[in-house]
Length: 223
Ligand code: AP5
Ligand code: MG
Image (tube, rainbow, N blue to C red; front, side, top):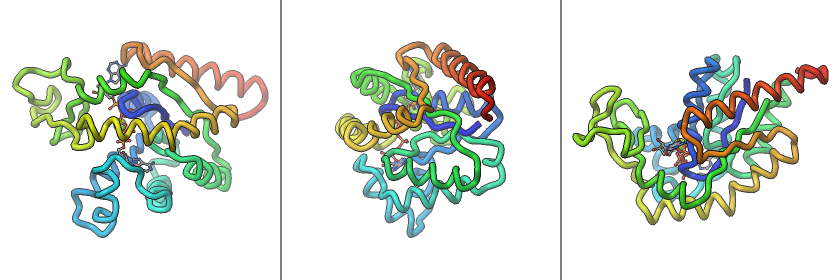
């Protein structure tokens, strides 16, 4: 399956994207994770994207689209993918559509995890990430010693999760990314779920909607 995750920063795109990728046996491709890895790499690309990511601004479309196209060309993405954090502008969505249509492999669905802004802000403030294995938790899920339940590594806050930068990311989302939700609604591929439910329930809602959608497509003779 070829899927896109949409939603406010903190909505749960990474959380649900990872669960879906495991369940469907396809890679989760997170542009945020890719940029954070590039930042650590002391490369030309790292120096170019640093200021944008640290300020909570979007990295320019041409850099982002090129990075995603390279990633989608890798062998593991042939069976499908879950894109998390991309596309984030209408031109990014158009570039993705063009590439996928060229290859005769259009998107199956764009999954929009809908949460109010105050929930997103609360979740971002509570998020802790393992600096060793990259797993993500909320503060309530972790022990008082601040170590990762999966690998024992140290848990940290993402630098762009400071209150000020997180609020700026929300504004950037509303101005530049929310139109992408309407773009996919118009294209007839949008699945909207209530992101305020518990993690397993949100996953269940997404899987049920994907399966209903697949049955509709098959009934109408499509693929
Ligand atoms: P990115 O890493 O994509 O950040 P984001 O979109 O701001 O999203 P987040 O990762 O903050 O939230 P999420 O929705 O993944 O939530 P999560 O699952 O962690 O991008 C970072 C930066 O990279 C951007 O600002 C930009 O600079 C750059 N960038 C990336 N992509 C780009 C692009 N395409 N173009 C240009 N620039 C780009 O969940 C949040 C917390 O809530 C966690 O603690 C989790 O445990 C908890 N949680 C999740 N679900 C639930 C639930 N149902 N109930 C309770 N708690 C929950
Ligand atoms: Mg994320």
